[in-house]
Length: 531
Image (tube, rainbow, N blue to C red; front, side):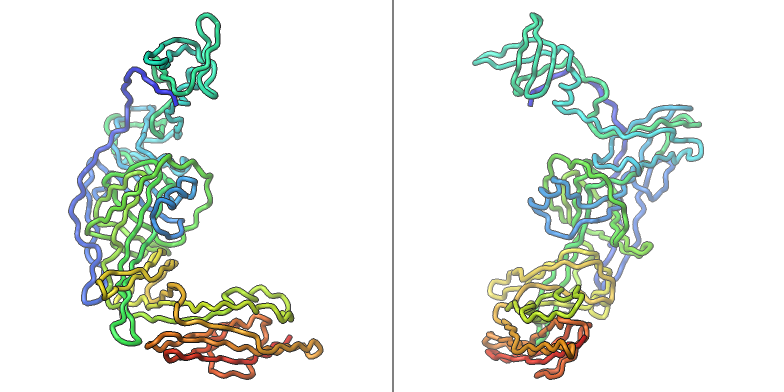
């Protein structure tokens, strides 16, 4: 791209003041094994006539992103247009207004702002100050935009020739594929794009940052305390849970649960010393036209210190308010503790053999009479971990949607080793969290069709199924839950069986099989379908 040099010019910017956050108390703490909320939100002093508790900057972040890890690949995808979420931004600023009509500019806004959501109000004179017009200007300065403004005007170009630099003037005819000039003698010269260009001045209409412009009508002249609010894309959050698994006794397991909030800001603006709120829940929002992402995003993980979040119910959602001011730079990620660690959460490890997977036969419109349907069975036995999100289980807090990573301590060197992860949806208190961590190494299964008969005259079919599960562990006994999907038709009856079973739903049954070390279990059953 060309290099530019031009006279320095003064550019007005919207004035805004920063204040250091006041100290506040711990938002949540873990006491006597129970997670309890503690402390109220602090009041952050504000100048002017605005509300005493309202800070200069405030963010309420909503997330529409799937929970996931923060890494280079995630940020690359975001730059490609996969915006992580959206936020409502509020700024308090002092502005000097003239009596009658005046034009005010405000440049401390996000590049991905939704201009239709902009709101301006005077807190000093709310009844006497009106917004007649408002606009969002985003024609930002770039080398290409500057050159386009100088088409048909004279410019100076510096071009390196060997050890010297040649300077010449000409009228700019085109900026496509380089610089095309018409010299004073009428000749045409094409200059490569790496030449240095000198422009006499900054052309009007271009701005360095996205800017809101208001045409106001004020009855009172002087300083006004104003509030500017809008929605912007490019900001999102999700929860990250870190669980430590342990087995305090044979056949028992326990968890230490730690929760963090991960925030991504790629909105094109920074938010210094801001009050932060997070909304957990499925808030409906109509799709908007996609805008171009900021040019670059550098991840910088920051683990913040107490005080933390205070959680409360808000409409049909949950609202998390941080008890201290937070600075959220543009093109950054931050992590903040959601609540202190909950220790001693009892859990249950379950092995499940689901040979046919899920979903087969769910949309069947007629009986499946083909013998071969569903015979491709897998061998993997899945490992699940579940725990009750209840106060009696030393937890009992709303869990926002997020990614759950589970680790276990290796006693050989006292290090935590990763053993699996899964994602959870928003989970209220007193509900059960169920995580799939992977597939067991030493426990395998097999499924085969022993017999199959169809009698279309009697409108019935009979199928014999055999399921084998083997425990190749040397010292540990296991219980495997064998899940069978009765997918051929909706009307079925198990007429013979080798093991007792539980009916999970209209299509699924479960056979518990306990296996000693090195043992094999065989489940056989006969199912009769009628239609």
